[in-house]
Length: 207
Length: 207
Image 1 (cartoon, helix red, strand yellow):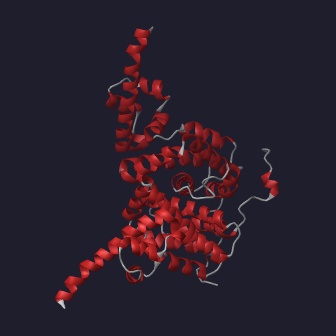
Image 2: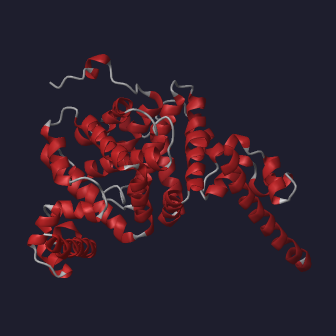
Image 3: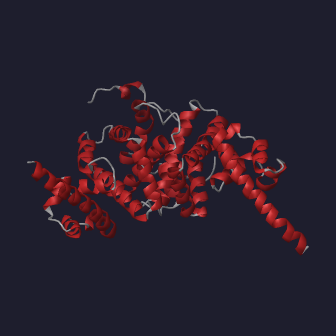
């Protein structure tokens, strides 16, 4: 048993690391949709079945490659399950639960990476726009899905910056109820509400 | 004339650079309010009048030290001038005008610095929370000024991340009217609206 474990673990760890390296390269080169499990496995020099074995699938491999501690498919399932009602509130609470647990250090490292490497920026962009909010708007069946996804990304990324990176009070230590009450309605409008004001307010003349 | 210019310019450039260095140190050590012009000038080894001469005052020196291309005092004057009506729209348009002009490279450098150095994070926090949105909420005379300021900071920082760093479309290339229509109402609510839902919506039981 001991011998078997000794022989196996390093190989497994190597396979996992090789897959992460290959995934980062292939996702950057081809985008999320163009990067197939087969291509990533070939680049890593392992069998495609290893992706399922080590990560459970392409989505979770992508999340691991970006160091984001969440499986986007599960996340979108959870968020979409309740329908349109209070979905903004659920998005905010889920974001806080994930990053309060993961620790600010991990988010700071992600933002540093994104602002230092164009490849990291491209991967986070795919993650936010396609895997999370793109899927969520699709599941909710709303109009203007790309704009809604980008708007959600802007408020959620900014909440992360202010709470975990800048540590701006009172948002840095506010409990989840307060943050959800203040920011949930913003996400709710970005996901389900009107994005342009009605015409009377649109008049460009100052009062 | 030539001799005078040669003798003067390097000294002036040195004075300006010394003031910027000293300002970064003293602002980080003491915060914005604790950092006096006298202290900064003493640290730089120059006369306090040089702060006005080179920067026009403490606020503009702070902005220069953070590399943010805006004088916060002028900015708040402009934003507050129109009162509560459409102030969210004005905040969004002004942010876009400043950073579309300055170029994304400058914002990316700022965010990299903030996520790499605790001192930069502290300075940007002071800038957002006190010099811009803290002053603005004060001028507008609204309740819960700290929370409102932090909420505004979260949406504006996130807009910067998504438009200039991640370049997430359609927000990355959207014209100012579209961005102001979509995000202006968020800033408007954060600055002037109710931050907690009315009691009936507050009920924790799912429908």
